[in-house]
Each structure stands twice: as C-alpha cells, then as structure tokens.
Length: 427
Image 1 (cartoon, rainbow, N blue to C red):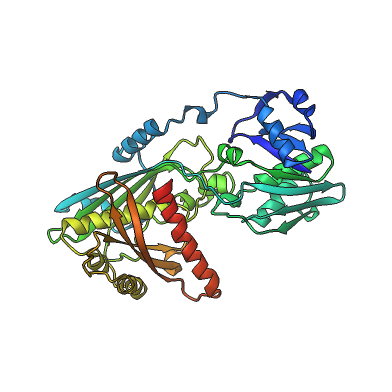
Image 2: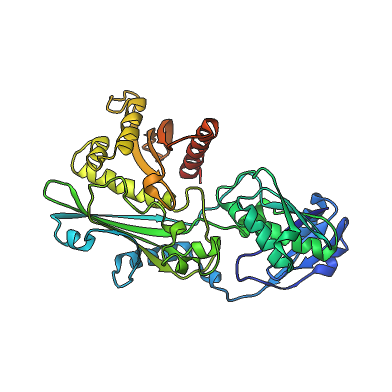
C-alpha cells in the first residue's frame, strides 16, 4: 500500500480534518489522525497524492513558530550578538581573549548572516512499516538505525527486540535522515490500518515538515597588534539550540551546555599561533525544528572564520596563503595548504579575468585535533553587471589520516564540493 502524509512542524497538532470526505475518494483506504499530522492511506501513490491535495486540516494556533520572520529575526540576532549583555555560553576558550582584544592596537569586526537551509536530499522522506502482533519490520534508508529501532519501539509501546530494521540506501542523507520520524509515523499508521504501509512525503510536505540548518548571525572580533598579528579572537554565534532536537531533550545540558551540533567548527585548533580565543553560543528561543545539515555547524562557522582571515590578510596587504601559513606550524595543516597551492597554481597571474580564493577547515566533531583537514581553492569570475559568480575550477587537498576506503573518500570529497557549490550559487 502507498501512503502520503500532511505533516507540520514541532508543537503543531491537527484539530480537525475533512477525513470523511477524503475517505470516499477513489483508491483511498483510510485517513489516520496522528497527534502531529494527518495521513492519507491509499492503494497507489497517485491516489494518495490526489487525495492529499483535497485534504483540509485545521491546525492549532499560537505556537512559537507562528511569529518567525526571517528579516526581522536576523536583525534581532545581529543586535544580540553585538550586545555583550546577552551573555553567550562559552563553547571554547584559550588564554584571555577579552584582555587581548582590549589591549589590541586594532580590532577588526566581521558580521555574517545565514537563514534557514533546507536539506533538499535526493529522495523525499520515506519508510515502509509492517506492524504485526509478533513484531515490527521497518524498511528504510536511515542515518540512525539504532534510534529508529528505539523510537519505533517507544511509539508502539513494545520492546526494542520486537523491531527489525532493514537498512537501505539513503537516497541522500546530509543530516536529514538522522531524524527518524518517517519510520515512527509509518509504524503508527500501519498499526492503525492493520496493514503494511509505505510512507512517502511529497517534496512540498518534506519541505513544510523539514528540519533546517539553523538561522544564525555571527560576530567575530579579531584584535591585531602593531605588526598585524592576531592577538585576540572572539566569535559569537547567535541561534537556536540544535543538540536537544537531534539527540534527546536535555542532551545539551548533559554536555555541559556545549551544543556541539550548532557550534562545530567554531574553534581555531590549527591556527595555534592565535593564543587568545573565545567562542560563544548566544542562544535564541527554540521555535522550529533546526538540525544537522551536511557539515553540521561548520558550514556557517568556518565560512565566517575564513572570511575574517581573508579580510585581515587583505588589510595587511598579505598573500592569503602566506598569512594562513603564518598562523600555524602544524605539519598536517601546512601540508594541505601547500599542496592545494601547487595544485591550483597559486600565485600565477590569471589572464582570463578570473581570481583565486582559498579556505582551510578541519572537521572532527568531538576531537578536532584528530579529525580531517581540507584546504581548497576556487577559481571564479564575477559578472560586474549582474553580480553573478561563476566557478571555473575547484581544487581540494584533504588529509583524513588513515583512509580505509579510498574510493568512498574520493566520492565524499567530490560530492561535498558539488553540494557546497550548489548551495552557495544556486540556493
């Protein structure tokens, strides 16, 4: 059987629906009211989708997400990042950043914004469930098979040993398939109709019921001495908690209030010559379902960090590669930076009207010093009339330590580059 759902975001619940009318439509088996959504069950996906378009649901009002206004909220986030009365939760601290900034010859400030980002994974969310008196089978592509087992068991009030998960290809995960509500919903609906059910979210409902990369503002203050060296660094990242939703309520508190999902990347472990560093999470009220999006928080934190490094190098009239190398003596970091410079022909004058940009990042969610390192160079041009950016070439040098599966490692790098460029240029 095929199933299609009309879901809503967290804290939303259906009050009523035209279920009786929809049940009479061709091919429809049933309409199931859940605590957080409404499911149309039909013999075919086409029938389910047709019925879904005629489904009318009255939802509760007054939940926090009703008041979201991206432009207004980003202005408030910026203000909260600037106002030191809004005390941030310290994520990382080394030395005396406040003292170093106060005594700096010059302080450069960078502010950066990003709004919510949809995963746009290749397959919309889907899962097949067969609930029987003797147990449950789930067929799903998931990033979290253990959590699927536990959450399905919890929703049905049965032991985890009664749930069997059949792992399939993801169809694109990128963090979206780290949450398991599709399998939970499929199981609940299968139990309600007494038959195996395949749940499929249309692209529209997947977007409406999605989990999004957090909307953030960031403020970085970099204190420089008289020679242009960075002596103090403070990064304040403003946004909603993520860890409690991705894992469990109370996760962040148990992690000593360090929301690793939200703040990942907000460190300078390989720019070790910056001795005084502090990064803070200025928390905003939770109003929507924010979660991991490929690269976790590094997509926005590293963008801000590397942008400020470029601004400082430009102000010092320093080569961006040479300036980064001046910040580190770490052999792995220097190796990837120097390697990508050779690969891209860094320093050679381009005659085609293009220019090169450089960035460096580490990725190691819980232990950045033993994670993977990447340095990348993009060759771009800008249409001065339209402002359109075109990427002509892209080079990346990566050090992931011992690579067990070289083909998988190469595929991961190539897909990450395509993913990142698509998001930056096409979103």
